[in-house]
Image (cartoon, rainbow, N blue to C red; front, side, top):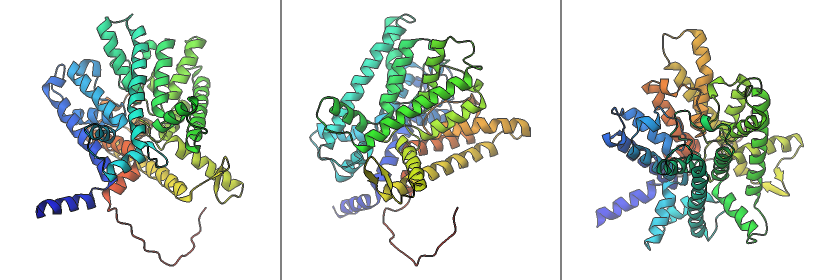
Amino acid sequence: MKFYLIIKTFISRHLTPARIFVSSFASVILLGALSLWLPFSVAQNNLRFIDALFTSTSAVCVTGLTVLDLGKDLSLIGQLITMVLFQIGGLGIITFSVVLFALMGRGISFKGRELCQTTFLHTPRRDFFSIVKIVLLYTFVIEAIGTFLLFLRFVFDFTPVQAFYHALYHAISAFNNCGYSLFADNLVSYQSDVLVNVTIITLIVLGGIGFVVQYEALAKLRGLEKRLSLHTKIVLITTVCLILIGAGCFYFMEMNNVLKDLNFKTSILASFFQSVTPRTAGFHTVDIGALTNSTILVMIILMFIGASPGSTGGGIKTTSFALLLLLIFNRLKGNENVNIANRTIPKEIMEKTISIIFAAAFCVFLITAILLFFSSQDATPLTSRHKFVEYLFETVSAFGSVGLSMGITSQLNDVQKSAIILMMFAGRVGPLTLAFAWYSSRKRGITYAEESVMVG
């Protein structure tokens, strides 16, 4: 009994919410890798463990980067395993655990409650468990509608059973912003199909705006909420602006390149599709490797920004990007505080925003440097310089849990794959969360005498 109390005390002191969050993702990734490594998950040849780990990490972190052709290299069981992994990864293992415990009549611990609060809500609420249940219900309803709409199109290309399976897989992949596709060319074959494009775009946006935004928007439409929160307003405005600006940039930058031989309708569809997917989805309807440098730069920026907090996506998040712009705007106006819509953003939120952005930039710099350092030693300086763009694109894609690639993923060696695995994991759980999980949760409140330093 005394030994049990010692173990319980040790766990309660050292297993902080950040460590629980990180360890839950790591555990599911390892379990998924072992499952994909087994012979029944592979269609033909045995799968190397590093490739199984890469695929599992990409699925759980809803990234979408892959070194395999999922439709050919994995068996039906292997494909179903990946579908379960990115469904769990998108919603979070903690969410499923809390709901399961509640349905079994077991109480929810304080840490479990705190994790759910920080996952879905910007401010604590007493009815958080009801919100979690609604989140799961909305998820399955939206995925079911997406499956039905995609089935209506796929049934013309496959048997009804195959069409339903492909529709289900791509609907879940799109809503969870994963980007895994069973087609060898991703969705290039459906480049001009309005139903497929609009359905996938809608699923990506709904999954990427965050569950609390979905909840508040639906509650507003039903008359249950009088006003939208500032968080929801920022997310919706920033999301719409990024989609419109991204689509406009893509169209004008590629009108004489990949869009040259397409009609106006298909060009508009492709522009909006490629504007939405870089913000953590990973599907594509054009050859990413054939894009111009200016378009690649825009896509890197969109991938770095990513989706919104409390969503299935990654990146620094739309709110962080918006708050950074608001900070610059208010500083130019001479305002000490960051003000918007008759509200002042707390300084600790602004400090966290800046920390997230710089931590993310440092991670991208570090992993890109590792990819370059461990690239082929017999490459010439010219080819290495060309690969710099591809490696940078791959790294930002991994961090933003996007999944887009310029075609270099399958060419990575084992060290580079390991670096991308770490980048995908850090991008999904967040660099700061990873740091908080590493260090002790005890606060060190030491303050020394202040001294000024020149900046700027």
